[in-house]
Each structure stands twice: as structure tokens, then as C-alpha cells.
Image (cartoon, rainbow, N blue to C red):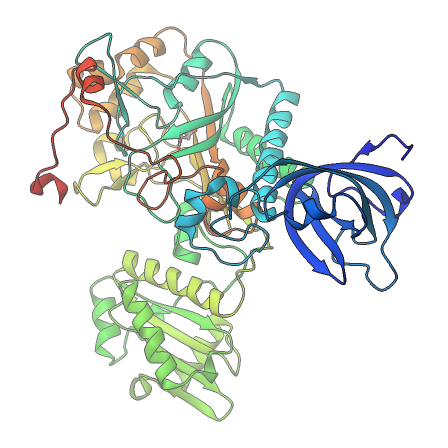
Length: 592
Ligand code: ASP
């Protein structure tokens, strides 16, 4: 052997490398013994290359002992695969490497699941052996796409003179909606830092500090009950600008996303449609509408004002509404199918559902007696339904019926294959109500946070009708997921205090929780605004994945545990003592 080997990745070799001597490092993806030869698929992050061992070669006995996930270095001649054995599915499928040197760099125990197969492996096992799971091509692709999206964001903001400023992880506890994670201070007995739920106040203080344009890929922690699409810690693209209008912030953020989509996914996005919060609820029954498809909610109340159908009349007389939805192709559903659909609606809170099937052989309905031809025709025209479709009707108080119909719209979209993960439909939702009712406490709380400015000219509503107040608050939505929120902030200290007071905070409490911020506002705070977008969610949707754990290298499981490291875990008594803490076993009461 004379040629000096050239180093290649396992995904690099093509026909034009034939005749060269290649050096490759990687993991044994698969070993096959075939007609006296040994074939090895060698894998690294770039791909897979076939290595061939002849029985005469001195490394043959060593190759016979290679097992999945052993780590090797090989050197060999790149040659064309024999005719008929090329693999068009593999980027390197035209060539193979004839072994010249084999060096075993490390051995692997038998992995608890097959790394080389994309088959379904129990997720708890994947998370426990995350390092093996991450070796799989799908996870490699996701994590690398994540890197590229984050880099695209950084580049975009850098080109526009934003400064990335790292805000601290140990901050003051000023809990809002969610609970803070607390860190006891050993040096200041009895006191605690909080981990940031978001760098909100610090980024506003960066504006008061005169930086003008701030961004950060920020880690945030919220001690909330976990849901399928939530992690206790997450990453957001956090942005703040001075001397801006809402329009300018929205343009900037839309530009950032368009930049990432173009540069990372090769997709040109058109301008994001905009809806006010009220319009989103009216048309889609949701403040995060999935705009990949139409099938909008239709207010059919007017069709039933004189109806004898007590359920509808009852809802209307009580000030509620009747909403109609088109179900394309729904006429082919059996009665039993409609019953099942009604059960889904009930899960969403519906008291019932009326269906009308516009079949080729006539109209059938669960409320046939109460529907005359004229009403059916009117409903058909209102919803744009055609022969072969069904129309579904729901009645209730306005807010509930809109939310129920909104969820049923998604259900129909799903059934009709209209929620294609490869399609990206962004939109903006604006003019959010300033306050919303907190279900637990029954008290009004800010829909966003108490630092957002009300819509121009609405300050007076604070005293007269706070629930009618709207905020300069905007959400970016993609395919029915909220990607993030932003707002124009309050920069006037007196107005900020009025909001705190409206929320029921005493002077003392304001000073105790937000004294530092209120003081900062007194020293020439510029008008400012910003936004934060959830990176995990953006990457999840960009990857076409359905759960956040698929795009986070080391996520927590559904109950907030890291099962690879086994965290959280108990700590020795001594460590607690140093922190002036004692662990109290949860009582039956608090565990509930
Ligand atoms: N800090 C807010 C959040 O984390 C976003 C913002 O207002 O910029 O939701």
C-alpha cells in the first residue's frame, strides 16, 4: 500500500472517489457475513459506508468479532460496488471500501435497543440511554437542524445590530403565572434565588441601559404541571427593541422566522396573515388558529331564532349562539360514526351535536323533525357545504360554543388530512384582551404579563371596565401552535404602578417584588417593546415532529425527570444542612 489515506466521513464517498485510499472512523452499524465475505456498514453522523473484508485479509478474524456499536478506524481502497449490488437508497451506495487496515478503537456492550433501526423503541428506554438514541439519524438530523435554526436567528439579529446579552440564571423571585424554581443561598442563610421564567425584566432594563437592540437565546424555567408539549426548562429567542412600534417589532420577528425558513429549510414564506384576537375566536374558535385549512366557524344563530328545537332556542334565548361547521365528505358517515363524533364533541365540553348529512340520496339529520328544506339549504350555503358533505351544529353560551366548534374544526381537519405537517401556515394574532380570568382563583390576571401596554387610548378603561381593555400584545402562531408572544411595554412608571394596583398589589408588595424595576423606570426609560419565540416548538414544527423531546438533546420525561442522570434525586443530609434546609416528607395533604 503506497497511497497516503485521505480522511472521509462515512457519508462522503461517491463514484468520483474510486481509486483513492480512504480513512474512515465510525461505529459498526451492521455486520453481514455473506458468501465468505464480511460486509460492515460503518456509520458516523454524516452517513453510512460499506466496508468489505476478504477472508484472505489478515484483519478478517478481527472483523468476525465486530459487533454493533463497536468503534473502529478503517483504511481501504474506494472501489465501485460490483454491478447489480449498488444501493440507490444510500448516498454512498455506488461505492465500497476494500479493507486494508482495521483498528478497533473501542468495544460496545450489546445496546438495549437497535441503534441502526428507526423502529419504535419505548421512549423511557430511549431517554435512559439517550446517548444511543442520539446516535440515530433522525435525532442527529433534528439536533443539527436545531443548531442551524438558532444560528440563522443569531445571524439575522447580528446583521441588524442586535447585541446578545446574557442575563443571569440566579435572579429575584417575582412569580407571575407560573411557579419559580428556587435555589437556596448558602452564603445568605434563609434566602433564595429564583431561576428565570423569562428574562423579561432584565431585557427591559437592557433597554433602560441604552442597548437599544437586545437578543438572547435564553434558557427559561417554569415549575408548572407538565403537559405533553411542555418541559420544565426551555429555550426562547428573546428580543427587545427601543423606540419601536408594534408594527416594527412584528416585522422584525417575522423577518427572523422567514430568514430561518429560507436559509435552513429552503422555503420562502409569504407575509403572515393577521387577525385580531376577536376575529380569531369568531372565525376559528381559537386564539391560535390552525390556518392550514379553511372550514371556518359559521354563526348560524339567525337560522334558529324562531326554531322549535328547544336546545338551540334555549341557547339563543340565553344570549348564546349556534355555530355550524362543514365536514367535507361527511355525508358518508354512518349513524354510528356520527355518534362517535358526538362523543368527541362532548369530550370538548359540548352538550350535544346536530349533524346534517347532505347525501346523494337525500338529506339525513339527527334533528330531522326540526329542519325544513329552507333551513338546510341556508346552512348549506352559509357553510359552503356541497353534496356529499355534512354540516355539524353546536349550541351553547358564546365562549364555550366557539371553543367547542374550534376544537371540532381541528378534529375534522385531522380526519380530512388537512393538517399536513409539511405545510407551514403562520399568522399573527393581535389586540389580545389585557386581562383574562384565572380559572383557579377566579380573579382577572394579565393575559400576557403586567408589563404590556394597553392599546392606545384605553387607559381609562382601567377604572371603568378593565376586562374590556386590550393590550398591544401580539402572538405568532404556526399550524395551531403558539410560537410566542410579545408586546409594547409600559415605560411610564406611574402607568406601570396603576397596572400593578389594578391587579390588587399594595404599595408594599410592589416595592417588595418590583421595587428595583420601578426605580429603573424612573431614570429615563425609553419606549420599548419586544417578543420571545419558543425555540423548542419552532424546531419541533420545522422537523415535522410531534413532541418536544424529539428536538431536545437531553429532555425531561412527562413527569419532569431526567431518567438518564436520574434527576431530581435526594442529596446527603450534610448538603441540606449547609443550605439551612430540612427535607420534609410530603404529607398526604400536600401530595394530593
Ligand atoms: N417574556 C415574554 C414571555 O416569555 C415574552 C415577551 O413579552 O417578550 O412570554
